[in-house]
Length: 125
Image 1 (tube, one colour):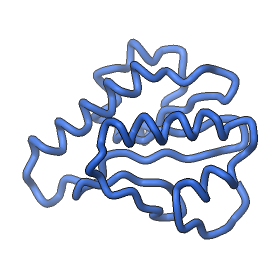
Image 2 (cartoon, rainbow, N blue to C red):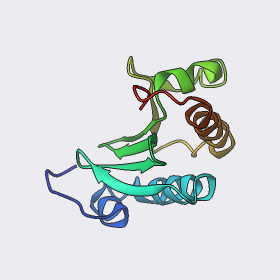
Image 3 (cartoon, rainbow, N blue to C red):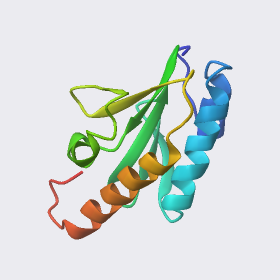
Image 4 (cartoon, rainbow, N blue to C red):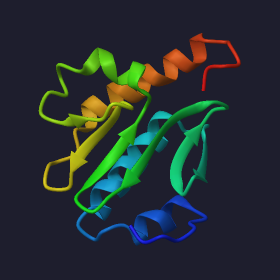
């Protein structure tokens, strides 16, 4: 994506590659439904959901979107994610040519929220 500072998530999505915008809107709506109380912010020029700690983020790229819920939240679902690339940082890469795996993302996001709420140490994002 072009190097620009975004103020809102809809603005970020509008600047994404046109072929990825439908998936990004779908992912944004899904994450909003899972974490309706979370603050939605742009940090490091990327959409984040925070409640009050980091829950998840997503990013737009040339041919895929990235979904970040932290590696420890992705790990339990690794077998179900076998058709997708996962970075060393635990970012799930979803090509724009594939449908968004909504049920799987929902499970990961809900797992992440549960992890954040159960942990009470300040070092945990």
